[in-house]
Amino acid sequence: MSYNRAGTPPDLSDDSWRLNPTLAHPHPYQKGLGITDAACRHCAFCGMQFSLKESLCPDCGSPTSNLLKANARFSLTPRNVTAQSNRQVNLCWTIDEDPISGDVKRHKFEEIIVPVVDLTTGEYREEPRCRVCGTAYSRINGRTATADEIAKAKAGKISLPTKFLAGAGTNP
Image (cartoon, rainbow, N blue to C red; front, side, top):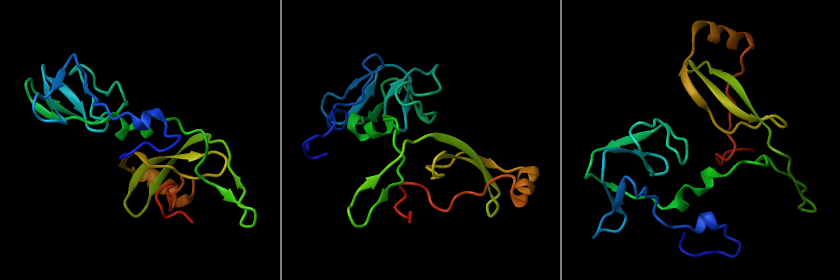
């Protein structure tokens, strides 16, 4: 963010580097780079460095990380880059707007996980959806669907994936 707007939340304004001082230190001459003091993991999502013994990032919970050797250079990540991902979703993204008055009606987000099978690709996934309106937010835990799951999807016992995901910019 190039400047702070009025009302900008503090977590989105925090441009300090995400650096674990027990495992790494900033590069002395090049801004935005760090050097590891010991072998560690580097989170591919938020950029935090953490112990080799841990499988999930302690900051964001991501299972995706890169292994870094001792005395290795790596790119530092500002905290504000991933700040929005650490927030809890309280209101559903589906909005009903009155075209005359412009009044907006929203409802509370209540998450349910719905198993889905894509018959064109043969994939089984889970979709986090809003319990109130059914809006799907993402697809997680993908794998190849079993023959039984494909048969159940064809019979209508397992849902098919929704056409549009919330926030994808293509929702009607």
